[in-house]
Image (cartoon, rainbow, N blue to C red):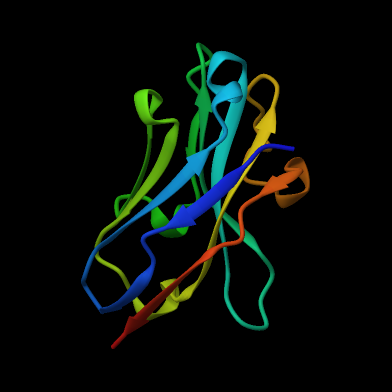
Amino acid sequence: QVSLVESGGGSVQSGGSLRLSCETGGNMWKKNYYLAWFRQAPGAEREGVAAIAIGSSGGLIYADFVKGRFTISLDNSKNTLYLQMNSLKPEDTAMYYCAAKGGLWSPTALSRSAYASWGPGTQVTVSS
């Protein structure tokens, strides 16, 4: 288990932008870990948005529905994960969660079942 705290959510109009942050416990940044963003809309399953590897494996993956609009990134100096969200749509409205998993990069990095550590979430609401 690692410490994860999301921030940066809010309400924007369609076409707007938000940047989410996830502050993490420091120990993982010296090991093989990967971090991900998930989202969950009311009444829907939690779904993977994007994932990225810490360390040398260089893993990076996006869900098809955010490709070209969202960018996941890391700031090792701040132990922080980001999700830059541009061209937001009403269907992007959801609670957004940060998740972490120790180990080498996996092609299942957008699978909810791969992760044991989760933050409390931050709400994103996009109005039309």
